[in-house]
Amino acid sequence: MAYNEQLTNRLREALADTSKVVEKKMFSGVTFMVNGKMCISAGDDRIMCRIDPTRHEEALTKKGSSTVRMGGRDYIGYIYVKEDAIRGARDLNYWLALCLDFNKVVKASPKKKKKAKAASKKKK
Image (cartoon, rainbow, N blue to C red):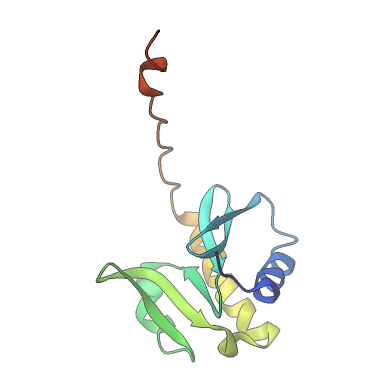
């Protein structure tokens, strides 16, 4: 997995006073889960923010931002922000605040049940 250690550390430090933060390696980087919900990720040269979908268009007016697109589909409420657009703490804090605000109101995804091991590895 390619990800930017410096960018990851900046997010880690910015979230230091936030409770219930867990880091997971996913989305080709490090994702910060807050209260069991995906909040923000650090990738190679950008962050991915999960924000309120009603603020999506407004967020796209900010420098270095674009809609997350995977598998030919736009993900409204998910924004990429290029690293050079968040060099200053003020810019990073803007995006982090959007993510944390949405995190307070969005519901966590239901936990997936683990599949039973192949019938307990068929008895011999």
